[in-house]
Image 1 (cartoon, rainbow, N blue to C red):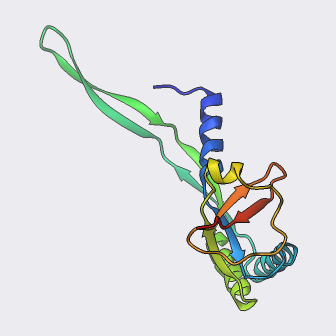
Image 2: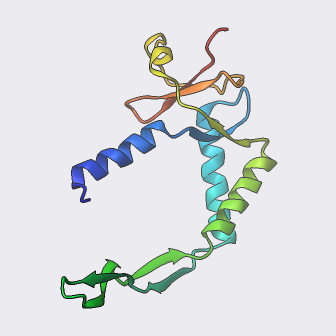
Length: 157
């Protein structure tokens, strides 16, 4: 089955739109301060663990299948599933992410995921970007605003 480019893009956007908000959280901290702290930690981590760009070759993948004719003669064929390709990656990325997370933890932040708000909660909320990280609970959810910022909401019981 083939998918169009538009379908693939829509699927990616839908997946991103439904994904939980991931952020460093410290109750009562301003979002601006959290952003500055995260940037400083990322810069520090980059200095401590510089990029190490490597290239690897991913060989092609084939699927073998059998074709039989009415005469009883069968033969094996192979179909290209994925062509061979070169791929570049930063070998230090996982370590740099851990250093950033440790730096943020030293500043009192915890890496947190907050689920997306459902449509009813979004409709009932006056939309405005979160400026100060509020107390959160299991009921808390996040709304992604058109500006790219987000709003954390904790619906009433």
